[in-house]
Amino acid sequence: MSHTKTNGASVTCDKRPFYTICVIVFLVVLILSFLTPMVSDDFAYCFSWKDWTRIRQIGQIIPSMAEHRSVTNGRVVVHYLVQLLLMLPRTVYGVLNALVAVLLCTLTRRLLSLGTWKQEACVLLFGICSFCCFLPALGENILWLDGSLNYFWGLACSLLFLYPFLAEYLELPYSENKSVAVLRVLLAFIFGTWSENGSLVFLSLSGCLWLLLWFRTKRLPVMPLLWILAAIAGYVFLMTAPATVGRAGAQSVPVIGYNFRMIFRTARSELLFPLLINATLYALAVSFGVDRRLLTVAGLLILGGLLAMFSYVFAAYFVPRHLCYPVFLLVLASVMLLAGLCRTGRPVFSAVAVACLLVVFLLQFPVGVLDVAISWHKQQLREQQIHNALKEGQTSVTLENYFPYTSYGIPFELNPLDSTIGPNVNVADYYGLEAVYGVDPPAEG
Image 1 (tube, rainbow, N blue to C red):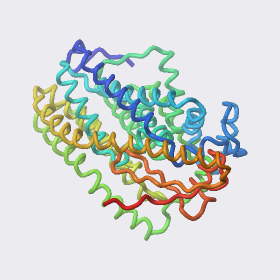
Image 2: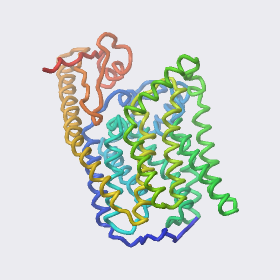
Image 3: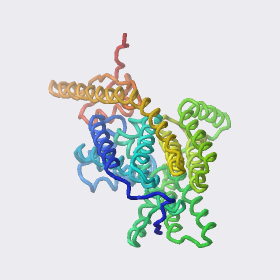
Image 4: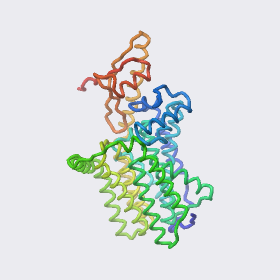
């Protein structure tokens, strides 16, 4: 699969603004990842699922994940990485998490295929600001170690898998040698094992694009078909895990009806603005004659985002961090529509869009960073309290819970009465205590 077409756009635009954006994104994600403390499942994944001993060697992780597949879920690849990174210095996770952010920016830029750095920077900044502004659980999805690997890294793996299909269908500049194409088979399998919800949506998008390519070229795209088959094999491996097969979702009609109302209520409260932006940009793109293939891709991305959202009607539970894939797909659709408008000679829309989103972003970002800093400070106080308790020979402590003010922070919440349930028991085991309890902070004001 290789192309030299650019839909009329030059690929020789100045890359320095893009590199500047990448450096800023890298540093911001790096610093915030360092400041985000361990919470909840992070403590549990420091231990082997096999015998509940502390993970100190790589060899302990494989039997741990074998048991994990039987008792928790089939996401053994991603949780293998979680246990590996929890064993290594925090610096490793921070750098890798920041590099994942740069990878997403790079893949998105390649999909834009714009001819000037101003247009490219405007559209890319719009995408970054939109994702940060509209993601309801930004800290849990991007900064929390266990959450970021499940969602943020999952997005990067999913887009890396989907990119050749998008590039081929849109006839963007793209080339890979045979060895890399073969390695994509392994990537496809890993992608398939990543997420019960996200992998299925991106797999469906790749299948739609593969069919569109087949109909257009009248030739069977063999290598992309192998990638899809490998991804399906990975997804089957994920879903046939004993713990996944035995897990019941919403089965009764009343529960499904309740979930249906909840999903619509959440969509209206959390996805209203992304959907309104999608609708506006799509109407503008149709009116100004944006390329039909780009309109098709944008439509598929929007549909994928909605399907990722409404699939939780049949889920056993739904939390804000589950909106990561829907928000990303809706934002990616808007980014591509803005790029299409730029290619038709209407860059004013991207300039207006990024100006509006920058206002929203700048009103949220400083408070969000402060929230992360406070959560880091609270963690230092907790660890000092635990250190003093151990020094004095105490076997139990009561730690103050923390509830963040913004979507950037991560809640730290322990049960005030029962020390035998998670995450209380996991925190106690991690620090070598017999019991840990939680207490809510005093009310403000």
